[in-house]
Image (cartoon, rainbow, N blue to C red):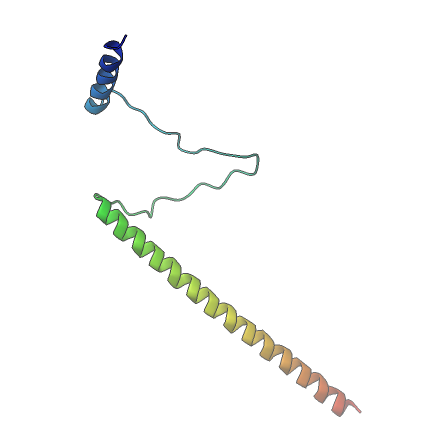
Length: 102
């Protein structure tokens, strides 16, 4: 029995290395009973050949996310400022309307 286990493991490793054994993980694993997520469009994912290329693309993606988050915050502040100016203009309009109504 002691000699059989290494032999089985060796055959397994050789067949896996030679491509005879094809083990794939499931494409999606759902955990929990909630709604299933939408499919992700992977057509824009760049193809990389090396680990370094993949790291560079990932760093590029994180920089883009950081830029977009910063731009989103800037636009949110701009929208809040515009809303405050609009409300102030409406208050001034109402005061003038009441003043000249009489």
